[in-house]
Length: 305
Ligand code: DGJ
Image 1 (cartoon, helix red, strand yellow):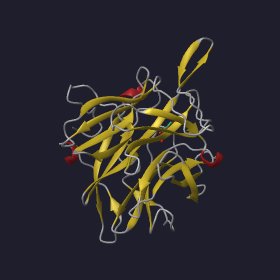
Image 2 (cartoon, rainbow, N blue to C red):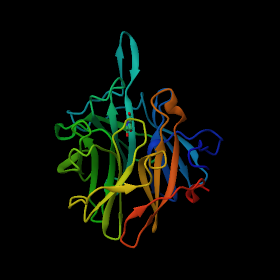
Image 3 (cartoon, helix red, strand yellow):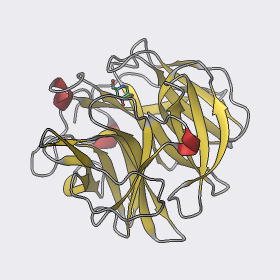
Image 4 (tube, rainbow, N blue to C red):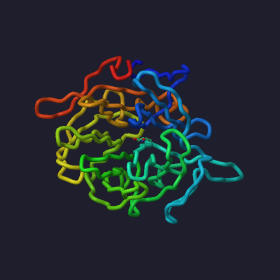
């Protein structure tokens, strides 16, 4: 597969897994992401070699059943106006496996489908990685706005939800409850007034890294990296990552394979209808002797070829 070109699944169909995430489980890598076609929200593919991706289905769509976990959460995955049923908007889905509950838990960004003013997080879960998800609703963590988001489990075993708040000015870090179904504590507000979007976290050599973008809608901009001694610790200054447009992409997530790290970004084509032509940019992250991560352009990423 070539960077910036449509990636195909094992049936030869274009992979729609935008703003996505990969999870290793039971000998497979599951690739989750946005699929905005028809009544779908989140698609999942799986692969045993990360080259051949089998489409497994949609884990979230307008008819995913609701299961209440908190009366504060809004159960709607669609709504009606003038007799017409409308879709909401689900972005940047991330799925974690919870060892204690043996459930797969999805966190994502929820909007009403008309604008980005609701700025909520949403949660769903299942005992399977690729089916039977139930929706637990959307909410504003600690009453705060929550847009671009990611999740991260640190080496101490704590899991965090990180999302853009205060109209994207700040990033908030929340620790999740043990079952991952809610936020337990609002731990920190970082990069205040830096307008960071598209956060992607990973750990290496005892440090926690974050790749993120600036806030320019669908247009790519200069990616930045930063690091801290812990998610809850002191974060460094932001430094350039990739070129002025992050090679025409915006960070989605970092996939770790042992000691190798891969940057996976979206090459957005804009809002609908061009959105559906969005592709991916996958580049291996290398590190300088000082531990500074960097990427270089290559047409064919080894991870997929
Ligand atoms: C940038 C975000 O990172 C995307 O997920 C999406 O919300 C676009 N903005 C919409 O303009």
